[in-house]
Length: 267
Image (cartoon, rainbow, N blue to C red; front, side):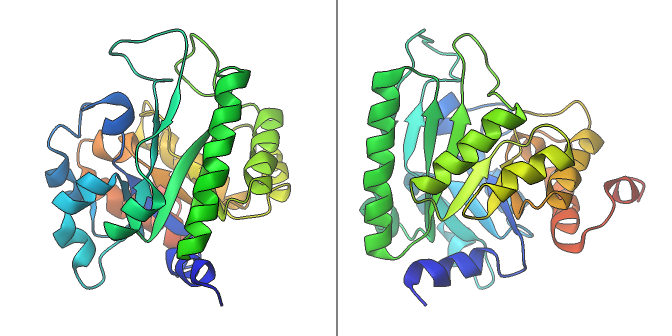
């Protein structure tokens, strides 16, 4: 087995992957719930297979990643202003903030980059070139490269989740060489199964913005898993919940034990 295969198998060692994302500060600043982000990491570190942060944040939370049985470290390499409130500009950008080498030196087990569709031809072309280069570098180091393909629209805060668009994004992310895709869930389970079927690699769905209720999020997760998704990356729905530690345990049970969400919320 190659280094990429070995490390990817660790991420999915329980069959599916549950990742907590705390890299939002690089894109959107200190959102509600992650103002004291190192404290949040300690609260949500028991249960997930990996935690997604930037290399500098990983250094601050080194005890979490270095402890026996601790979560893997997925390093965010890039940023965009597509969802930023401060200094918003109609012309979006994409930029690399870290190299794969810097991530590896910080202890990363995998790296992740955006692949944005809808920011304009020139930006898309540069984004694609950067993603391809980062993927080559990741393979040189033998670590998994996670692609996060998203369709965005000027003036819209949410990414586009139409099934036809998701099918395109799933194939695009696969064709550029992603080892894992982090993709929005959209449509019905039957429609999302078609998205899964066109991908060359496992899909973990994006948790997205905070839902109105915990059950709404958990039902979306259960539907995605039933359609063939191999896990989830959750941010705001965990650390903007009333009890992040408890909700981390709940998500763990849905992902790894297949427990009905409605039963968990009644406990």
